[in-house]
Length: 268
Ligand SMILES: [Zn+2]
Image (cartoon, rainbow, N blue to C red; front, side, top):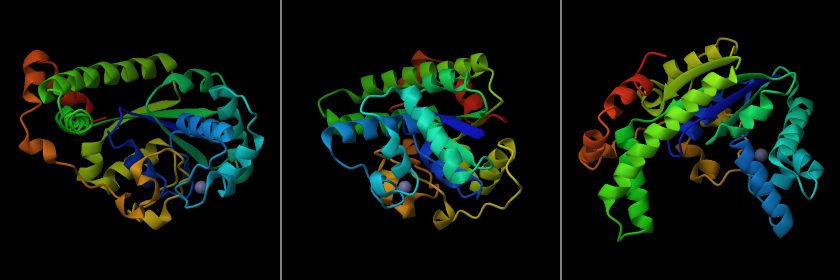
């Protein structure tokens, strides 16, 4: 069974990329599977319902309802993944690809050991200037008294540290294929980028149309995109261009522009 694992830092466009990839009829996007399992576990203990991006609650969703029915009262992430994979094969057959978007690489370590899975990894990044400015703005809303400069420097450091860690893990894991993309590349030419990744995933050739209605997605994560079909097409957030708050990052970490050039705008 084909399995694609997209990993990125938060707010780096991995959800929008995944929605667009799921326009291919052989791809089903299940959101952040680890996070979905966590939400389902909480909802079980609190007796609440989790909404799915298909518009139904998880307990009535075409896909998640069969998973919910099988989840024991206590389960760990690996056991939960096993149920998701089995139900996915039952529901969609072995020819479909399961697309999982994530903020960490940890589940890959046990998925890699599972027989019968062909796993391809996609690392998606975002220009560090955009990442830093958007993080500084989000933090300012939460804690208005805190210095934006300090948040920005921390965000720049995290951008470098976490993206490096993802690159290193992908190398260690010896996956069946790895590729890198970025929010910038996706927004610049969505069709070229999506079709390139479809080829990398071994999908049949197809023209990308950018139709939100054609996307096959069942996303349980609490992302704001979850129910708004209109925001499933890439539009570039260029607010960083009118901000200087990322400058101290460059002065303190002069390697950032080089990494940016390689990871965000590079050829692979
Ligand atoms: Zn659903």
